[in-house]
Image (cartoon, one colour):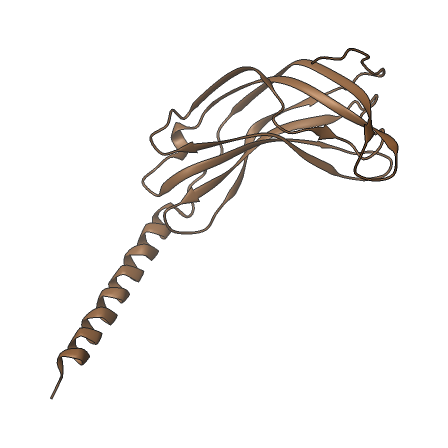
Length: 180
């Protein structure tokens, strides 16, 4: 009749089907949850330098430095299906060469169990804020936005933008100072 191997195969297939149904149930219970929260971004210092760009032809490019504060309570995002959040602060602006420029300035990973309340003061950019030319000098509409990816235990990986951003005017002159 039925051998031990065929019974083990049936038990394994049934267990796998049950686990797939439970995983789908885990996904569907949190799939349509709103994951956006209010975010406060304040800029305390903006500095602009014109430096030599070593990545291409020997031209000079704009290098921006931004010091910022971020406040946000991300507790409402965490539920039983959230493993971690990947936060990142991005700058969006337009120049005469490019209609849309996007640069990531800072990022952070918040694991489940970590403190989900952000109260960051006088943070500096983690990554260089280079423009591929001189598009930052005198640019009045550089918009900083905090966004995050929700990394779930099961389901899709949503990209969420916080409900708060700030526009930063960049100076019309370059800094000559050596330090930031």
